[in-house]
Length: 377
Image (cartoon, rainbow, N blue to C red; front, side):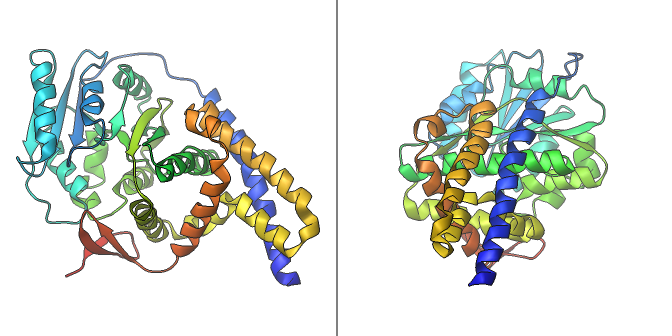
């Protein structure tokens, strides 16, 4: 019992230090300065689509009203009868003569990562050397491309990854996941950025120079991985290209999910992260101060003041990211969901150590040790 309590005390101490690091890292991120505006290179925006997401029309329209001199938008779908095609056609017709946009039918993906397969085809069709790849559930303001072009003024920067504010649907499970993304996940990104620099990317919206993508082998290499967004940033950093975490915050519309679908989604990414970043996955134990404090108090009931301190530091860390960076109203208004989300996240993290099987887009797959996917027969 003493050994267990000592281990919990060490882990909890590390977790509280981690909360302080989030606050410091957030302040450093917010103090970064933008390079002076310069040239505006033409940009190809690549939008892989699959099905009709909630708010899809508004999401796509936000990329057609960019305050930017020259860009094109490519919509990629696997089949011509996909329900997203009608939405894309409507958007293209609405902006005909103003924005060069077209639909690319990529064909059915022979590999598990259908999104990466579509992007591989779309990159070959794109006209320009600056590529902005963005998911269908992303919504932006007209200044996105201008901000990315400004940040690309630094010739050392080869790839830019955008932070995002997760916007939930109506279900409580969706709201809790959004709170987790806007606090726990973003806090981890902030600390990693401060301690080791950006050596990964978040996949909702990524800008990359074509030369950098070619240097890493293109999506012919990346499409073999489940977490191709993490790998593209990791690979770019390994090859000596600068990876920047943008000052522009996008909206990630995660939709509304029931309990089983939400937990299945979380488990898939937990197993993927464990395979892609095994040491980093172990280190996630420090991102759960509240569950650790509760376990410690269960072992030592008289240590309840530690729980009070943990609540304060966890709140400071959560509002540093959710309040100062992404300005998330959900975390501010429904803060009482934060402890529940932390408990669920902790249980999912523990469960992620078991098993390597996932179901992704109705395909049963095995996540291999290096993060690649194998489709099960």
